[in-house]
Image: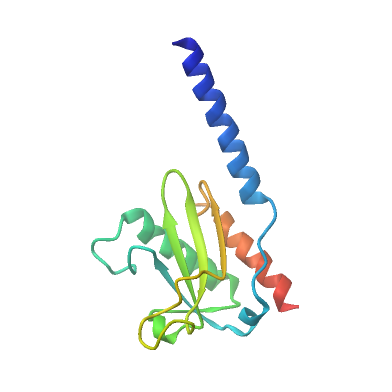
Length: 147
């Protein structure tokens, strides 16, 4: 029994270390075509922030990402997908958070964005209250294509 507890604790520590390393490691590169984007719509995979069935964690993640975008000042948050150049989709779970970027104009007419993300990062605690490391990775990737 003690061996199982020790093995589980060791495995948990290793996974947490790998997740942290992945979150702070290499930032994926954004496509250069996104450097012309000016308007961003933030949503969750399960719906927008006004969807009454949306999990509170996802609603809070949307708000935190919108606040970070506004503080950053290089993109303008819009509240309708059809007004956006890019769409950021978030998902906040205890096991892992996700931030992905989609081209708002790549889907079929009237059907929304393409199902293929252009950029995505994941990490445990990546969209949490104080810091938003996943958005920080987006900022770094944006700065690389903006120059």
